[in-house]
Amino acid sequence: MTDRTVPQRPRVLLLAENCNPEWPSLPVVGYKYARALAKVANVTVATHIRNRENIEKAADMGAPVVYIDNEWIARGMYRLSRLLRGGDQIAWSTNQIMAYLPYVVFERQALRQFRAELARGDFDLVHRITPMSPTLPSYAAGRTRQPFVIGPLNGNLAWPEAFRGEQKREREGLRRLRDLYRYLPYSRGTFTKAAAILAAFPHTIADLPEVVRDRVVDLPEIGFDDTVFHGRGRTPAFAGEGPKRFVFAGRLVPYKVPEAAVRAFATSERLKGHVLQIVGDGPELPRLQAIVAETGAQERIRFEGRKTQAQVAEIMRQGDAFVFPSIRELGAGVVIEAMACGMTVLVTDYGAPGHLASQGRGVRVPLQPLDGLVRDYRAAMEACVAEPGRYAAIATAGQTHAHRHYTWATKAAYTAEIYADVLAGRRPRQSAAYASDA
Image (cartoon, rainbow, N blue to C red; front, side):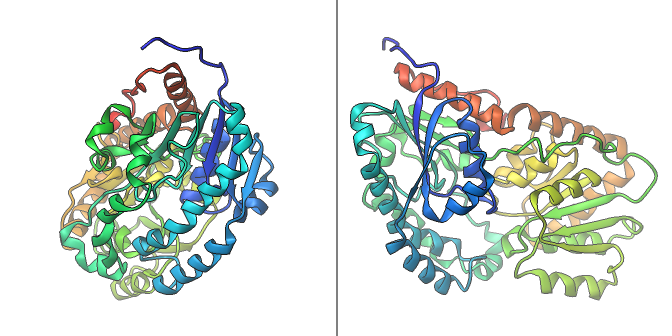
């Protein structure tokens, strides 16, 4: 195919329903990705009205933002979702089911909002960056004269059989209905009408239709802000003679299995004199506190509560190893943040964490039932203390990889290359840095 003329800074309509600088997980990822893309392209961001207050308070998007108000349906569906989930910490599949109709309406209203601009050719392409679940179809795909890009997407990681109890406590029974998303209106066209599909890790790519694989680019959705997460000014991991600091950071929910980290640390004789910090909050907190009390480890295991990103980063810079036993982690942005701060990461070898810690960039503990996880995480932490030089080198390798490939600026620059390929009519390029997270 003959290359077409490609603008140096393409004009991009970004669809980013979840885009909020102060809300954790997907909303802040959407915000930081959109903000980074605004530095490499002339973007206009279409997002939900609920994000307006925090975006305007931050005042650093660097691009026009248009707010789409579909609260007439979104508010009621959100309240119903919270009622069915018993809050907003668990039952993620229920949340996704309840999000379908509001999201279709969001994209429909966004296309109406920009109808004249799209018809005039004021944009070169349309890129949906959030939501990132492949189960939420796009109404916009194929409905504009501009090429449509979607992603990064992430999903399709099965529950491990050994943790069905945790699945039940997560109230994830509806996950058995997941594959029905393929039959929802607009689902098939979302992929067949896309010019490029950005997808994170093999577990997501395997879920996409075979006929679109030539348009799929392996690009993890995670990234980090290197003004917040960095190792500047820190002492190298495991240096010096003082107590070593192990850190778990994340929501205290069943699938992240913080219990494995707590039990492993509390029952180790070799780790006495060292410290485990638990950063985060959630429904598992009372159980964890009871375990610590039962084992008499109150002086060594500290519950830090929920922290801001800046506070988490500071704890990571003071820490030596990041202990993350999660058994169903789709993206694991916190692992990259820990790497960026110079910590040795100890992760379960399943899903995103196992890919990120491959090639000697971290320690991978085999996925197994809880007792085995406790045993192997205990051994991994003890090894860190016994061989500090070896595990400091692993921390350095992880830190180098994170800063080379996972800053938002680097990922935005790579996305701009994909835009150029799409607009030139070329097959989207694949970076060796992200292909199955080499």
